[in-house]
Structure formats: structure tokens, C-alpha cells
Image 1 (cartoon, one colour):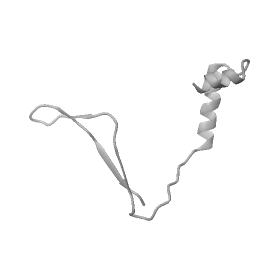
Image 2 (cartoon, helix red, strand yellow; image 1 turned 180 degrees about the horizontal axis):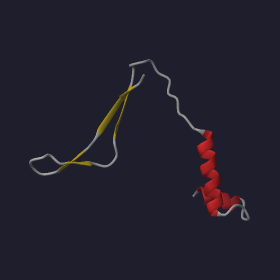
Image 3 (cartoon, one colour; image 1 turned 60 degrees about the horizontal axis):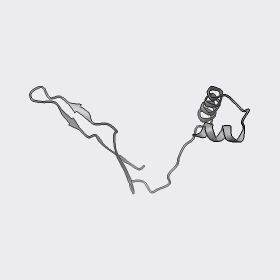
Image 4 (cartoon, one colour; image 1 turned 135 degrees about the vertical axis):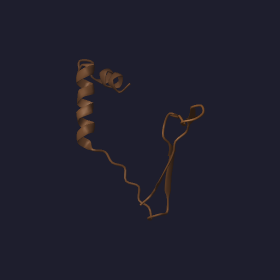
Length: 74
């Protein structure tokens, strides 16, 4: 979508591969970081870790399990 918007404004601009390479270089060099200010121990950040994992005990049937992740804010 970003390339289509770029091409609409610059019809004779970069090819798609050159555009993607330029964006990749920019993102690698910009080192974007998000800082969230808070008091230590005041918050906890939680999420699920993507797809379910298969848990295979030595005896019994394998089951899918959600992986819950919690990280204290320091």
C-alpha cells in the first residue's frame, strides 16, 4: 500500500524492489524505540505469545496450550 501511494505521487519513481530496499535501510538505521515512562513496579504488561503450542506429555495425548506472557515494568 505504501508503494502504491508513493507511485501515485511519483509515477516515474523507484521500482518496487528499490523502494522496499530503501525503506528497509531507513528502518534499520532509524532504530525506532518506544519509551513508556512509569513508576517502577506500578504496571505489568501482558500478552499472549502468538499461536498455540503443542504440549506433549510422556503419557497421554498431546494438547494445544496458550502461552501467557507477563512482564513487570521496571
